[in-house]
Length: 277
Ligand code: HPA
Image 1 (cartoon, rainbow, N blue to C red):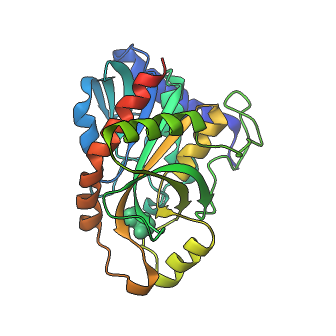
Image 2: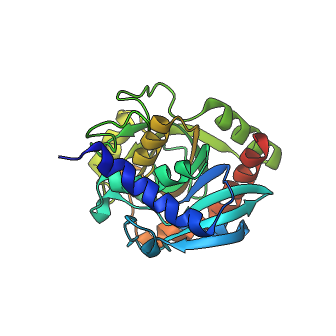
């Protein structure tokens, strides 16, 4: 049985380790998804920590995930970015997967930007498109808030009526309009993985109201809502999941396709960072 101190102490210990050598306060936390780590190159880096050097951090194993916490400025705004995240399919618990979100918050980050690579379940979505996550369905059936609640972090029963901040979505939509590309708005289905879905599963996900499917983001968004952090989430559509003409999906294709959406995500990220102080 987990105790409250087994949740809070790892957060403080990891935050203290960072504060020993890095003192600036990030305004935003950013999570860079599969194939989107290149966005980190836009950060004017002030400090970097390998996850392996931070107490209690799991060590990232997914291909295409570097496993570093990067501090610096993006478009003149102080940020902390996760280059590589923790997935439940790697065997981490939902609570382990969200430790970095809680550490970013403990260090002062007050807003969170999540990105991921996802399959386009909506038949109108094309590879290279970007979707603003408007809502999610938790098909992982795991929740990082299971266990004793620490009231200092957030409430026992968080409201989930609008987990993704509508104002941030509107800002992203305006940025996409100005830059001349389509930004979809839809429902993200969080899957446990690591298998991609079967044709029957994609068909089911569409019928149940999903527009995109991926293997991340949901635990992190839940942890942020619990902490009271406004969240924006974006999916780079990396494969088209039409059940009747489904081709093979490979991790390499997913990463290459994420590259083609990276420029759009950078445009959106800059607009979001500029929109609030
Ligand atoms: N399903 C789940 N996760 C994914 C997919 C998918 O089709 N594409 C990229 N990540």
